[in-house]
Image 1 (cartoon, rainbow, N blue to C red):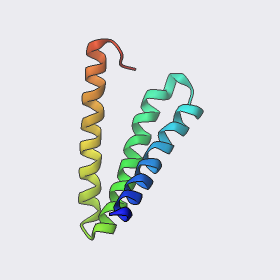
Image 2 (image 1 turned 45 degrees about the vertical axis):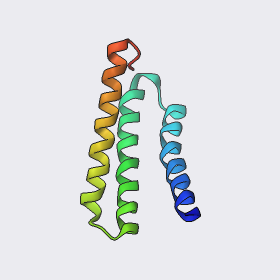
Image 3 (image 1 turned 90 degrees about the vertical axis):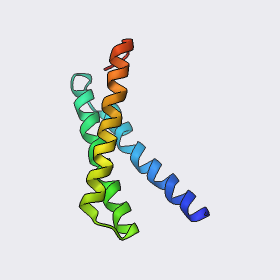
Length: 87
Protein backbone atom coordinates (compact mmCIF):
# COMPACT_ATOMS: atom_id res chain seq x y z
CA UNK A 1 0.00 0.00 0.00
CA UNK A 2 2.84 2.41 0.75
CA UNK A 3 4.41 1.57 -2.61
CA UNK A 4 1.18 2.54 -4.41
CA UNK A 5 0.99 5.82 -2.47
CA UNK A 6 4.59 6.66 -3.36
CA UNK A 7 4.00 5.82 -7.02
CA UNK A 8 0.91 8.03 -7.02
CA UNK A 9 2.81 10.90 -5.42
CA UNK A 10 5.64 10.56 -7.95
CA UNK A 11 3.20 10.51 -10.87
CA UNK A 12 1.40 13.59 -9.56
CA UNK A 13 4.68 15.44 -9.09
CA UNK A 14 5.90 14.54 -12.58
CA UNK A 15 2.56 15.46 -14.10
CA UNK A 16 2.45 18.83 -12.35
CA UNK A 17 6.09 19.86 -12.89
CA UNK A 18 5.98 20.19 -16.68
CA UNK A 19 2.94 22.51 -16.89
CA UNK A 20 4.40 24.66 -14.09
CA UNK A 21 7.60 25.04 -16.09
CA UNK A 22 5.59 25.98 -19.17
CA UNK A 23 3.75 28.68 -17.22
CA UNK A 24 7.06 30.05 -15.96
CA UNK A 25 8.82 30.02 -19.35
CA UNK A 26 6.17 30.65 -22.03
CA UNK A 27 5.08 34.09 -23.24
CA UNK A 28 1.48 34.95 -22.36
CA UNK A 29 0.39 35.07 -26.02
CA UNK A 30 1.10 31.36 -26.52
CA UNK A 31 0.46 30.13 -22.99
CA UNK A 32 -2.87 28.33 -23.48
CA UNK A 33 -1.83 26.19 -26.50
CA UNK A 34 1.53 25.45 -24.88
CA UNK A 35 -0.19 24.29 -21.69
CA UNK A 36 -2.61 22.06 -23.60
CA UNK A 37 0.20 20.49 -25.63
CA UNK A 38 2.40 19.97 -22.59
CA UNK A 39 -0.38 18.47 -20.50
CA UNK A 40 -1.32 16.04 -23.27
CA UNK A 41 2.33 15.07 -23.86
CA UNK A 42 2.82 14.42 -20.14
CA UNK A 43 -0.39 12.39 -20.03
CA UNK A 44 0.85 10.35 -22.98
CA UNK A 45 4.18 9.65 -21.27
CA UNK A 46 2.57 8.77 -17.95
CA UNK A 47 0.05 6.53 -19.72
CA UNK A 48 2.88 4.70 -21.48
CA UNK A 49 4.77 4.21 -18.23
CA UNK A 50 1.65 3.04 -16.39
CA UNK A 51 0.86 0.55 -19.15
CA UNK A 52 4.38 -0.81 -19.07
CA UNK A 53 4.27 -1.15 -15.29
CA UNK A 54 0.88 -2.85 -15.47
CA UNK A 55 1.81 -5.13 -18.37
CA UNK A 56 -0.92 -3.91 -20.72
CA UNK A 57 -0.90 -2.60 -24.29
CA UNK A 58 1.16 0.61 -24.11
CA UNK A 59 -0.40 2.67 -26.89
CA UNK A 60 -3.97 1.67 -26.19
CA UNK A 61 -3.62 2.55 -22.51
CA UNK A 62 -1.72 5.77 -23.22
CA UNK A 63 -4.27 6.95 -25.76
CA UNK A 64 -7.06 6.20 -23.29
CA UNK A 65 -5.33 8.38 -20.68
CA UNK A 66 -4.81 11.17 -23.24
CA UNK A 67 -8.43 10.97 -24.44
CA UNK A 68 -9.94 11.23 -20.98
CA UNK A 69 -7.43 13.90 -19.94
CA UNK A 70 -8.26 15.97 -23.04
CA UNK A 71 -11.97 15.52 -22.41
CA UNK A 72 -11.57 16.65 -18.80
CA UNK A 73 -9.57 19.71 -19.89
CA UNK A 74 -12.16 20.54 -22.53
CA UNK A 75 -15.07 20.26 -20.12
CA UNK A 76 -13.21 22.35 -17.55
CA UNK A 77 -12.43 25.02 -20.17
CA UNK A 78 -16.05 25.03 -21.37
CA UNK A 79 -17.35 25.52 -17.84
CA UNK A 80 -14.78 28.26 -17.28
CA UNK A 81 -15.91 29.93 -20.49
CA UNK A 82 -19.53 29.78 -19.40
CA UNK A 83 -18.78 31.49 -16.09
CA UNK A 84 -16.31 33.93 -17.63
CA UNK A 85 -13.06 32.52 -16.26
CA UNK A 86 -11.59 30.64 -19.25
CA UNK A 87 -8.21 31.48 -20.76
